Amino acid sequence: MGLGDSAIINQLPAKIESSKCLLVGLRSWDEGMQERQHKLGIKGVSPAELYENNTYDVVGFTVAELMPGIAIKLKNLLKEIPLLND
Image 1 (cartoon, one colour):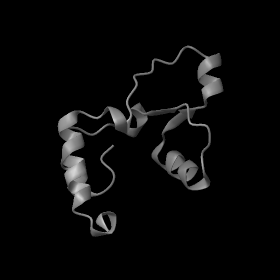
Image 2 (cartoon, rainbow, N blue to C red; image 1 turned 30 degrees about the horizontal axis):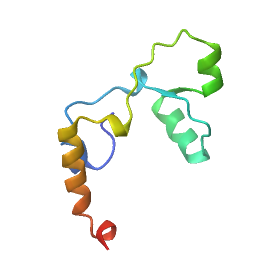
Image 3 (cartoon, rainbow, N blue to C red; image 1 turned 120 degrees about the horizontal axis):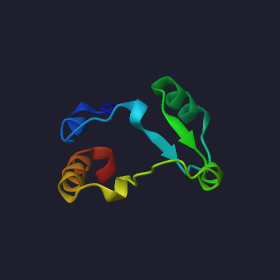
């Protein structure tokens, strides 16, 4: 979506409009997450809603499924953060 640290954002190949995002399968939303989700206009469905309503076309994408090159770049960026390397 293009939000966050510009050093990391600039390493990513593309941005996705929040209107094209769907949070799927989260079991709990804390208050801060709910506020950001509402502010950004991101829809969300619980595991139960997804199970009961099979009309969603879901393409799986998680942080664990990043392209290897991007994962390596992110790992290298994180190594430069002193707090994480103590």
